[in-house]
Image (cartoon, rainbow, N blue to C red; front, side, top):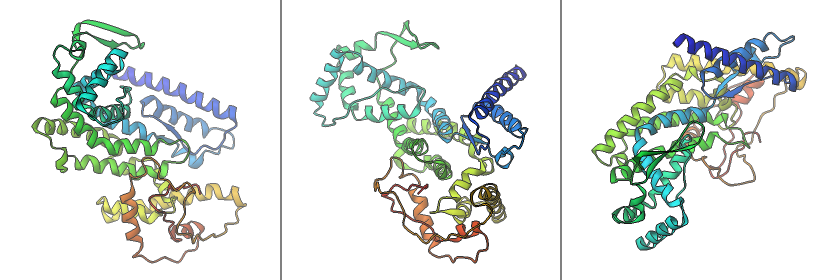
Length: 408
């Protein structure tokens, strides 16, 4: 059975790879640095196939032989990590989801919900929102919004003869693979939410706020995000490590057991993709290297903070610089005909004119603050190569309240 699955995956992967190659040829794209895909096994096969085919092209221009072509989607990995923890909350999430669905299912039910708000004298102006079960961040937003109306849902639950409680005696509805709603007359709707369900939701929302911000941080479409990825990876690891040391997450024995289960599931999924930094695509580190606020010394600094052995730190630092040099040699002759001019940057404060902090930018501020303190105590070295010049030029820092546009 395993052999058949592997064979099917390889067949699908090669088909996808052939289609990608056809698109590249049709569009006249000869030089490809990376292709970002989610983590389906067929996609790995597809990228390997594209590398093989590109290297067989006449006058192939595959960047560094396609060695770093495969870029795993960080947002998708984050989704896999969080979803593995979310499954431990399945019943609680379903109960709250059904309660939210009640409020949105008819005008009469909405009126009953609004009346309950008035009786509770809530001043909250927001509204509850439905989630898309396959997107954990929308589930996070649904739970975050629903928690603001916990007292309202509790009031409706206490009205035993009210329409809210009658709703949970209706047959459960499930959606089949084709998206068609099927009624299960033998089982009632899950719910209403209990105190345990609300406690679980509270824990989930508090703990996963950073993962929500991470998803926003790496999912932008109007500016690059790859230079933020390494900080994101470390932030997720730190958040999982802090799971049991933050007392605000401890809401009772059941919640603590639930946290234990969540942590184990999420850590297993995190380790699958990120436990070894050498498994990261090297271009993730190169992108951080090309961020003028951080550069290579910051990467070395992070490796030390992550408790790497000194020898491993030096080896990894040299490896990152070697790849940067190779990329320089790959691109610069096409730009200036081989005349490498040294251009020193003396700007210490740069940023866009927007002056506003982008959503999710707060994730990673601690890295910047720590790094500013570190570089204030160090000296600049003599340089003889343009890459060395860039790496040792003054760093470009910007106010945390200003969006940093790396392309500027």
